[in-house]
Length: 326
Image (cartoon, rainbow, N blue to C red):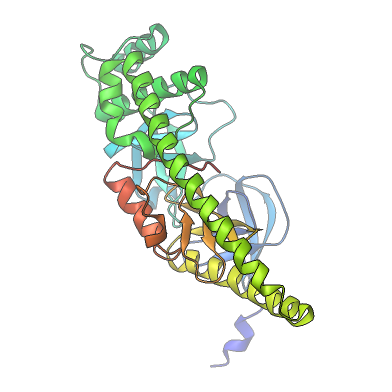
């Protein structure tokens, strides 16, 4: 059979477009040829290219795993107090803490499906949130609703105290926050700030040492022929940037941005497990200089290719503390 005649075949697919340059089908990732707004679109697919033709209604959701939880700040809070981004929500936002169902798309994204029937627990939780009370004593509150309430409390306290957080940092303490109310939320955020201050001091000292060492190295390099040095540096920079991106992709992270710094350092921004992280690494060895999370001063014992697994362990054991925000 001559398979070449199928290579130019055009297919029509209805897929969820979440932004960026690609869209995922059940079997492969496709390049989007024309920029459009996020939503459900009918695509003309030819080879690896997908051209959006017209907006469409959702298709194929019933065959996907369903995830139920409660909404908070554009996320779905479900079992295990996990708060994941909820994609393609309607223009009219669901009520705060509303019970919502979503479907797990082939790339792992959670796609909004619909608002489910509410009970008295959601209304009681909203009143408690408005009045700054805790959830203790309120009956019928599920674990996901309790967690969503805790995140909402932290969100209110975060705005007033000016202390940012990401859900993975506080997940292990979120049910205690829900039970303790506003005072517990503020205590949680202040503890998080204290941990960041400690890590920031360590990072500053490490940075000063790195800059000092880099200046010594640069002074020695000035004795080398400038033309040869320039050509070598261009090649090394291109190679280190490529290796940094490749290390992140192989570790399951998605590179977002890369910036060169003085002293042959790289600042890499990447997405992993639903969050964004910024880390600083050595350009030649990809040794971590500042992980962007609290590693108790052990940053230099990690390399960029192993850092995502360290972040995963910190999230799964509820000890994540982010020190550099993307």
